[in-house]
Image 1 (tube, rainbow, N blue to C red):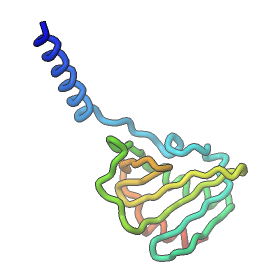
Image 2 (image 1 turned 120 degrees about the horizontal axis):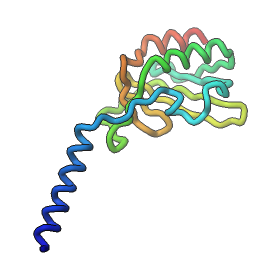
Image 3 (image 1 turned 90 degrees about the vertical axis):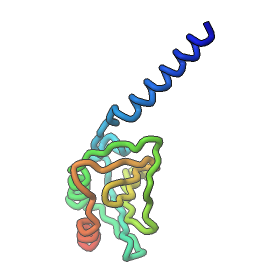
Length: 138
């Protein structure tokens, strides 16, 4: 009788592991990863690795431009919220609402950290050149 329980437990563990490996994680868009609704974002602050200063804007058109760029991608949470690669230097983007609440994004090509959760970037790459151009336009 004890062997049946052991075999059942072993089978259940194998089944869960197979599901974890072969069932794809859910892909979400930017709005599902940040806490502040995009229509409530009133200020954006950004830095890039080559410049240790931040630039910010409260221009709704510039905010929409950045949000539209980041909305072009889908994000898939990484298993165990762990990444194999964190660059020593990366851009960081802060979003603020009128209440002073903030969300942050640290993009690095094929992965991104959003509010301390790691995601794989789907449907392309968050290109540093685009972020630099946006930064310089502020």
